[in-house]
Image: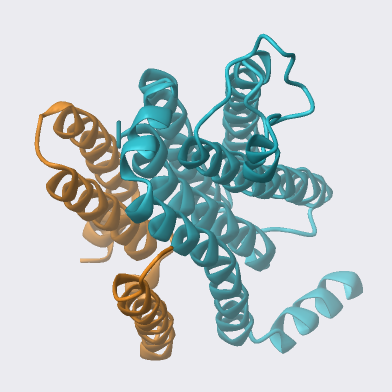
Length: 221
Length: 97
């Protein structure tokens, strides 16, 4: 009983709106991190438009679309998890969180297959400087075809941007595991759901970034 | 009134989700059309912006947040716009060797 009292007392001292506003500020710094990369993409696309189209052709649109659907679905399950928790349906909230985590993992696995296909074609991080000197990636063997500079820029940006995005998926996943643990312990509940809410905001932002990455890499061919 | 809102609240995420899936399919189909480079990128970015707006408004609950949250979004968006416009106004008039 006394434990419950102290708990609600603590809850009263948390400024949820202020915390959320601060978290949104953090999300904008994330947005600007990606915006810098989008800007680089936009400038190089404008100077190497044909190479960008050719390079984008080698990316599989079906896989890209599938991954987009997976991430959108994971955003829905995240929303449902928070809604369930707010209605005290903790069990449902936990299942929806597990579903979100599973979908995020599926996204990463598919992304991994995509990346490894590119590794097999030896187009991982070939450098323009290396190409000028007659050799691109250290993985290239003499028989391999050299890529034009514009395509090297495209794939360089592709690996960096999807790589940083994947890193965010991993961070979001770890966060979900922690939230799940706290939820099963009961420290995250219908009264104290701020942590899940912020985890959700982070996850949705990662989704928003993918919404822009998808057409720029898979639909420009 | 309250019950009505609750029902709406529980159905809304699904409507938003189906709209997002529909827009994803639409953007893939539209990209298959043979429009010019400029037109196709404008279409793709417009659809992406609508999708992002849906996620921000309904999944991230900006529609239920106080005004200051929307102000923050506006400031962030305008800053991004300024950076993109300034960079491109520089790049467009450069003589690249």
